[in-house]
Image (cartoon, rainbow, N blue to C red):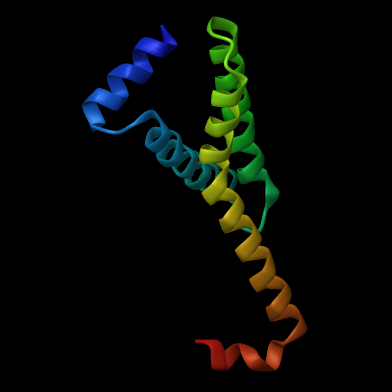
Length: 106
């Protein structure tokens, strides 16, 4: 049933399954930021995306054992949420260590 839903989503949105993973990963990340009322520096939204993706891949592996496909799916899903988390944390650290330079960055 889950596979049928994924096929329907890819056909309706005219996306590949890889692109669907990327878009859903970002959507879940943004929704988790809003639901948990945490900023992008919090690890909680990132963990939410990871939890959804691991559950999704576990269900996929239950029906068809394809570990290389599962790894690609996890990387596609987690890439941009990971980039957002790292950039937000680096920016926060920079702001804390260089408070006098923040005005120049705007």
